[in-house]
Length: 181
Image (cartoon, rainbow, N blue to C red; front, side, top):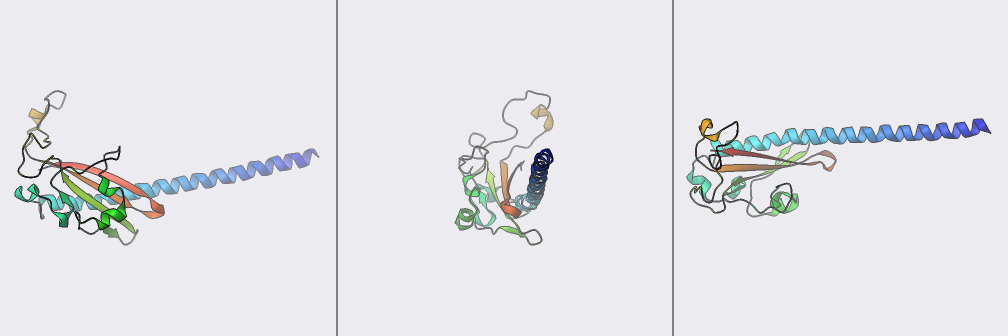
């Protein structure tokens, strides 16, 4: 009778051990997919940087109005997400159907990851750069150990690039980068 009770206890312990190992493997796999998606977001960030530096938005005058073919908005997009992600990127189906952004998604054929990005000029109105309506890195205080006056920053618009990556096992990853030009 005691041997039977010990056998049942060992069986239950073995089952819980197997479940624990399976759960750990699933978690490790999901984390690796998430990291892979974050690394893939660099492809879209580099594409957007190229558009801003040498592409269709290289000139200052080109950044004064929306450019749907490059997923560019001359003003800050509405955000309801507590993490600062523009509404337009929260639903990939709605993004693909959106008339304001017509640049196709980027697809990594080897991993089947889909990448979508938007570029926003951090201004509250379109048109020429105006420090009263646009964020600039040279604004604000000169306090702190990295005094902005010592950094020799140019005055110009700040652009935020937000990327959504849809990866394996329904992994969704967001990445944001801000640059000034």
